[in-house]
Image (cartoon, rainbow, N blue to C red; front, side, top):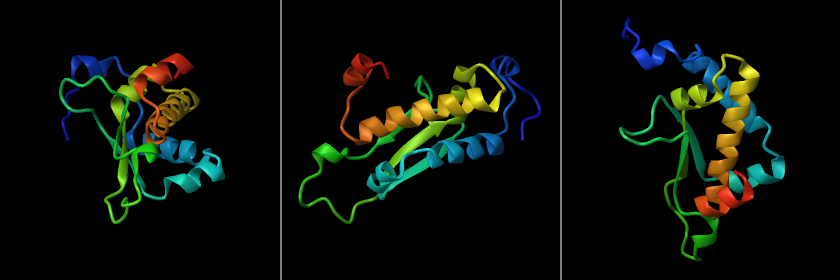
Length: 127
C-alpha cells in the first residue's frame, strides 16, 4: 500500500473502498424489485479509477436490451463498473448520504444505457 497520497488525493474526501462498496450495495438495494428482475445478467463491479485518460464515474459494457436479438443467449454478463475515487470526488463530501446519492445517480445513468438510452438522450432527460 502506498503511504504517500498524491496532490489530488490530499483534497479528496476520505472514504474507504470498503465503506464505498457498502454504499453501492445500499444503493442497489434501493432499485425497485421489478427493475432488478431485468438485471439478471449484469455484473456490477467497483474499480478505483477509470482507464487512464478517461473522465468517467461509471461505465456500461455489454449489449443493451434493445439490441438483443433472438440469438442472445449463453453470453458473458453485461458489466457496470463504478469508479470509487471519481464518484467520491464528484460527491465532494465525506458524508455517506452525499456519496450514496452520487452512487445512485451513476447507477441509474449506467442502467439507462443497459436499457438502450444513449448519452444524448440522457442529457436531454437531465441525467
